[in-house]
Length: 626
Image (cartoon, rainbow, N blue to C red; front, side, top):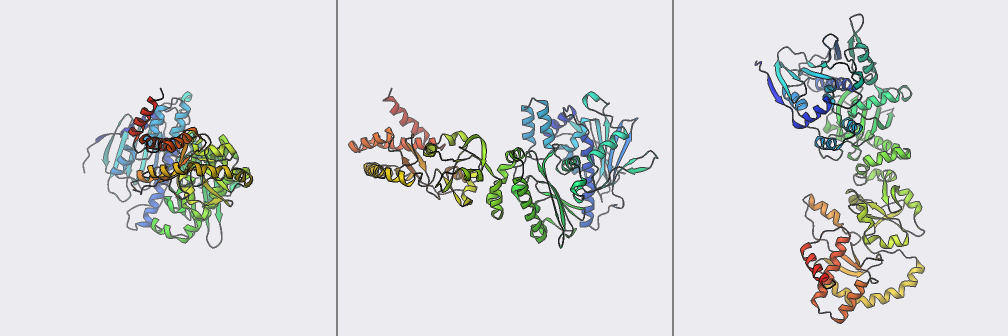
């Protein structure tokens, strides 16, 4: 066996996070011990699970526990477990690098943030686990041996950019992390973590619920278990304090912030299970990262089975954290079996309904926090989960033209609808400002109709999948024909509209032919009041934004020709009609028709097929004006 010591550089992101920890402005440095104990607990869970799956694994599971050893003279604290342990490659990949999605975004935000409190929040939001040790350490030594392996590994670093790693012949099964503590500094909230009383107090506060015994040497010199080991999800709600729930949430989520809401569920009878779920107060940085881990922890009769059980929650609720403890599942259950398991599917359905009803019952301020953080993800369920679509619609809120800052629920929108209004009107776009300035809104604004302002990419998809709410269909103000007039208004305007159709018939026919390569029809508009023209789609046409989204994903679509609507009351359009009637063969009129079309495309935030030609023609026309 070689005894060579290798020196390695930390990955750049890991190096930057280490420096953040070493010079941390995070005031609560006690959390380093919580993180080490949590890691040790995970290692014990994984070993027990591994022994269920591999009966030939050479591992001692007779007394699984976490041990904490203190040396006040040497100023060291050691957290030791006899769990699964790590191989050399696992040590390098788990500690020498950071593979977690969102690391680059986190570091970019930290570089931009000058405020100390905001920086601390960002660090806490990321959940840096093992790295938090360097808030209190001058040096950290880790010795580990993978269960079933013959050789162990010793890792050491002062957090200054490099670490050493070497093989160890006589390492015990599991992992021991020895922290060489910095001197006590009460002004910097750096306590004496070699003091047994302080360590016991931290364990009681943060890790009392850990299901494995945490042992320390007592006054008698004998090891004592210092945590209660009571599973929080198995205790009645009245027996669990809010502080205990918060610390348990931090344990399962590795999020330093408190949860926004706690969701408890218990089923008894032929199929028993208990669930303790948490809705975070902030969105994780990897919420929209495709390969990010999701799901909640699954236990069977208090035995840990797996992290991130995706089968228990749908993807649109991927931000949920917590535990489900089922009584009747096999301990050898696999992810593949779980996807088809009837009991798991039943738990999933009940969890979804419970979470959605919990959100619906949230106080307004807490709901606003929830929707800001997770609304985009929840709206994915409108497409992916038709069985719960009505419940999801009940908790959705949207920006609208009713209020510039406050969003509205659909129920509130329906309550404000005008008498005789048969549709819930909406318009999709890239930003609120582009929608508010869209010509499509002109008639709706003039007549006081409220329009939902939808700017998230998922909005383009769910409005096509969801038929309506409370019997009111969703209707895009940029599609189909618009009918905002009551019977009296229709009767009064009928003769005028018929006259306009007659007067503009020749122009409309000519422009439809002239622009045939890009539009399917040119017609008069009932939705414009001040703009000369706008582009609209047929009722079931795909929107330009959705078309661009599909193309960006590599899906080629056939060209969708849209409709050009003209405002007969606008001077440009009436002038074009007059010019066409007197000099219909003038080639400049075709250029004018193309300009009208291109301006309408730009007004809705679209992209021109030939921007250079548009600029050239427009410049030539402006020459005659100046």
